[in-house]
Amino acid sequence: MAGVIGTPLDGRKAAAEIRCMDQISPKLLPVRPSIAAIQPNDIGRVAYLALGEPDLLPLWFGETDLKTPDFICDAAKKALDEGYTFYTHARGIAPLRQAIRDFHRRTLNTDIALERITVPGSAMLSVVLALQTVIETGDNVVCVSPVWPNIFQAAEITGAEVKFCRLAEEWTGARWTLDLEKLFATCDARTRAIFIASPGNPTGWMMSPDEQRTILEFCRARGIAIISDEVYGTLVYDGTPHAPSLLQVAEPDDAVFVINSFSKPWAMTGWRIGWLTHPACLSDQMNVLAMANNTGATTFAQWGAVAALSARGDEFRAFLLERCRAGYEMTRRFVESQNRIRWIPPHGAFYGFLHVDGMRDSFNFACNLVRNARVGVAPGSAFAPPHDALTDSYVRICFAQDAERLQTGLERLSAAISSL
Image (tube, rainbow, N blue to C red; front, side):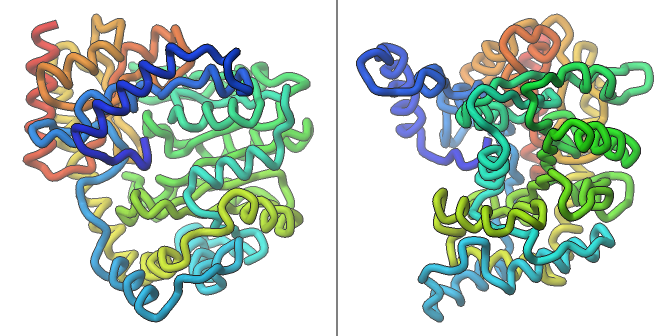
């Protein structure tokens, strides 16, 4: 869950506010029913129990424990000192959009025109812009799940119905699989977008180029947009510089929206800056949407992002990938030592999505971990629609951590599972 910070007092206050909200009748307020029905997702509900408490090991959020590299911070400080505190172009400063274009050239071997690149603020805001572009109230969005809960909540906020197509576990082959026929059958006459995250959060599943082409052909034929979350694109474990991207197979004016972020590969979660690659014909509309939603990304943060896309930034990404690889190996050894935990090893991202045999209520299990074992995990229930019994047998950990910190967290998790 991005953007959650605070102290122990903050967590207790937030939990109290949630209880108060539950007691307010939406009939007393002029609130849209879909907004009145919104509840904090289960990751946040677990985190609010002990957010910021020093004896708790938090493995629940999608971020490394590394701070943003100094050279990125120094670039933002320099921009502040030089007076870069005014409005900029709503779609992002020119040097940043050019640096993004260069980044795609060297990681994807593809040339993206500058008019297709918009930096509105956070990657989550890029998701919102894509949804606002294609969704009318009453439309539906099909999400490949398990999926980060902010995504389907954002779709609901735009007025869409959300439908889910779940990845299947293939335990014998140790892989997640997407049944394309099932995905296409989930779509109907009201489907306006398919949302896919690859590499996926929480599974680490990665879509193949052939799957991308087949989905693109289906969507072209039916006038359905694709919103592709590729924020973990460079955090892959097969030795390639980037996961397969829809930017490599889509035409410039295909209805494809690719989300990317500085949060994960450059340890910049708190900066709230990412970018959207969109159809070339929508550059004017994206300018208006970026203005209306955020008036553009924070000016000095954009100069930090320019530094992130430099050669030093490439070195840091390589360093972080090795840290993730070490966390992956530690998690793999941990899983192999357990009797009640299984996983399908991720191809990308930095999560262990751990199946706990015999667990049927991941939310309460995660709450008890916080209270009794002092380790924070994300419950599987957060990543799927309610009453998804299969996903409710999972918890997610982030293994992009210091080795000692991760080892201690895993040991606490193991002890708690032994007592189930």
